[in-house]
Length: 163
Image 1 (cartoon, helix red, strand yellow):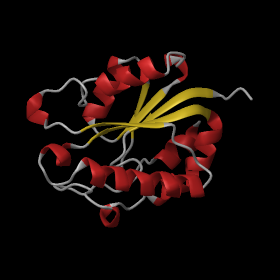
Image 2: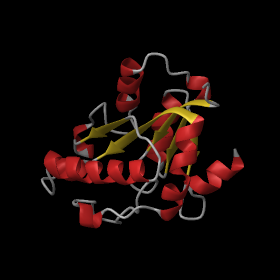
Image 3: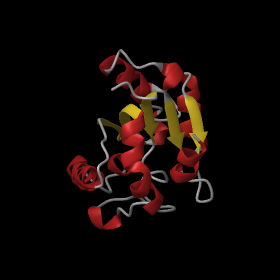
């Protein structure tokens, strides 16, 4: 079945789960879904050919958590999304510190470019990037994605209902 849109790129913290201000989601116990996301993830999975998460995870670079910790969080997240009839195709993360100026860390578009390498059939003109920060918007726009900034007042559910 041909889907309406191609690829949905999502930031994680602040889009899928509640962001912890001045701290990091370091364990499953810290990871709290934004209820609106769980409500709409099934419908998003039906509208998009694929959904990809693009997330900076500087807590690893700071030694506050390990890649194993992050993998446990992501496994929990993916299982919950699957249990709600949603689907995430791939997760890209940057573990580096902002001070390292790594090309994979947003606002640089390295993780998005890696997705284009892994999925060469992505149609940018039918793809979106949803994030909650200016760096998300910079990364998405650098790769000519339709970029939408969400907040506690304008969530993924609000955006979805506007489609």
